[in-house]
Image (cartoon, rainbow, N blue to C red):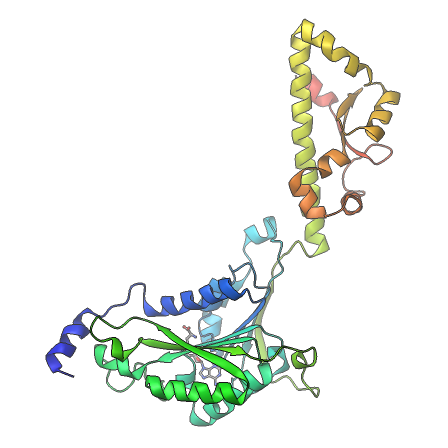
Length: 372
Ligand code: SAH
């Protein structure tokens, strides 16, 4: 290449957003497209990709693996649940685990994943590790999708200050032909197909150089069977778990119960508030009050019970306001949380004050009347 031409480019090549962010965004887009539930990031380093992926609502299991425990530990606290996660538990369940170990070894904790990402990992592998890597990832883990990214050495001539490799720990950097030949052979050996793409566009006029980061997306061609998520023979765990966080989720009965109780009380309070302000309106206006009176007649204890049984209308009886559970259940959020009326009754039993027959939430308004 003409030296002046090269120098001109090396001055201006600066990726925006930075290349590592583009790689992570690429994975995120893939996750949004294929909606995997279980994702493992191999060579997860400082967990920044994992942190980004924890916000993808389809993911229920996230795992990271790295041979360097210290780099993972640096920011692993960012993967812990926040106070807001406890205050408003999510509907999905999420478990995040970090393992210390090598992609050259098989461990049963790596089975059953839908997507495995290896972002800028393979070029850090020693020759012996790179040889074992396909059997571990494609043969043993065998997820539906594998994403592998690696530097494209043909782009290096456009990068300032790159002498041999882009990073001192790189064991090699491949041209497009080298990567594609390795990827195609691996895919064919393990019954996957592979599509090539990348991030970091070359400058206009230099398209032949290809993307700065080359990416292979591998798709498993055969369907997953129950056996393939279990190893054939019982295997020893070789990775060490260094972090595990189980996020609060509404799938867990204890969090669901709290959420339902709060929502039931909140909804009942709103209904009560509406009822009381309506009553006040009527009592301020004698003409309207007389119209409201007939229904007020049924606020006797006896009739009140009947109304609770037969009707969904909230009502006042003596110093108590009754909000039928059926009415509360008809509110979308309560309905969605509980699914069935029976479940609602079960979850709030003993936790919310109910009418004697258990069909309505009961509030005492004596105190409120005094205040008014
Ligand atoms: N994936 C990260 C960066 C990767 S750098 C990102 O997207 O930003 C490569 C990482 O691979 C390093 O953290 C290194 O410790 C790890 N690594 C190197 N050899 C490994 C091996 N045999 N098994 C697992 N991780 C390895």
